[in-house]
Image (tube, rainbow, N blue to C red; front, side, top):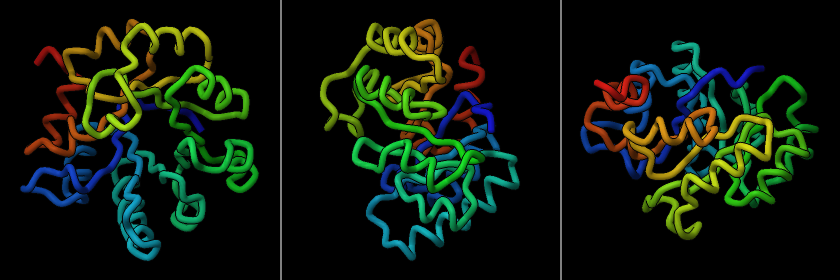
Length: 207
């Protein structure tokens, strides 16, 4: 299964614009061209997460978009998600592959070159690297990594790297020049009053 997308939307219902629910915001983002969504709602119960995952699985299929589940392999399998997104406290990529088989994509969060190399060596299909610029949601991971570190990561590994953290449409060119295959976004789309338009700005930043 290919990593055939350049925008990777990560859910956070606490950052959704007041005019939207998480579902309606993701629906609008998909209308705007987003082709990959990661369900990341760590404070939901298993039952709540499963219900939300089922609804997003149906929604993403309508748009021929991919659905990833953060950390929870059981939920990913239950809803036939396209893949799993592992954190630095998740099971290893190797263990996830054993449970998921070869037909699912495995992504991994990384905040260092060491972790990025490890994820690639274990068979991850792509990684996120963060935070590139300052963002409140990633402040716990320390100071921004910056474009130079992103460039180093992209030079050292061969799998796609998605840059995450404080990225705006105006920064897309510099992120791409550093070697990133795409960008991962949260508030830039979900906190917008018009998520479809916000997504389109990342595809057409000149508008």
